[in-house]
Amino acid sequence: MTAAALRERRERTFLVLAGFFLCSMTLLNVIGITRFVQLGPMALAVGVLPYPLTFLCTDLICELYGKARANFLVSVGLVLNFFILFVLLLGNSIPAVPAEQMPPWQILQLAAPVALPNGEIVEQSVGLYQLIYATTSGAVFASMLAYVAAQYCDVQLFHFWKRVTRGKHLWIRNNFSTLMSQMVDSVMVISVTFGAAFLRGDIAFQALLVLVGSNYLFKATVAILDTGPLYLAVYYLRRYLQLPGTETVVSMEQASSPP
Image 1 (cartoon, rainbow, N blue to C red):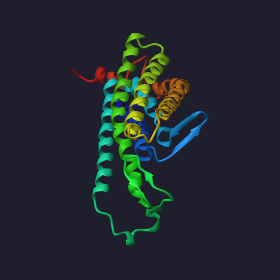
Image 2: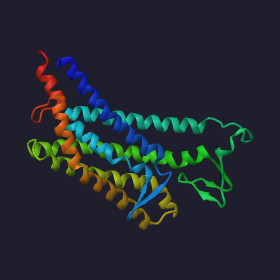
Image 3: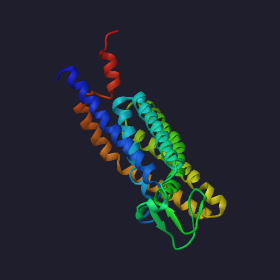
């Protein structure tokens, strides 16, 4: 294989991993807390379901491409968080068309007054976008704070454990970095998203603890279960990308480039 073809293969693989990372992160913000699901003892916001995949993607990128590429991807994700929040605010600030011109499915009729997550009390009816905005905008802000703390923490801890183990025991750096960073993520995203509701008395402290515990239990379970797939992915991708030992794409490119 020529150097150009190998380089294109490596960049395409990075693009696929980055695509799954950004898609999972975006789904968390878009569908967020619009629905809660029951998985055994765990009560989860539906947006959490794809989120553990982001940690698997960053661990793979850390292992195959190095710390700089992983941090770059996390930074791109942060910019996308701001973009999502901007579009939500823009859509909410532009005046809506008159009610009589709205399609009927854009207006939801309520049987009783409802307190939206942003604190607004709706008496009889609510617009579909207004409801999505109320449930999503606060979650986006919460996820931005949790995202910055957890994802950068994951990258830093992954390389810390890699230095400590001298590049051996992939399961240690995968699990210990992910489990610790996901605890940060779970506590921050739940406390920020539902903090205002808790202070207003709309949600009990015990319910808050259940949400944090369920959130973390799900993420920790997935993190432990993905250890096998991570080993398989690293094994096959190292062969596919022609990376010997513990070398990364970046280190190989730096070594082969002329001084």
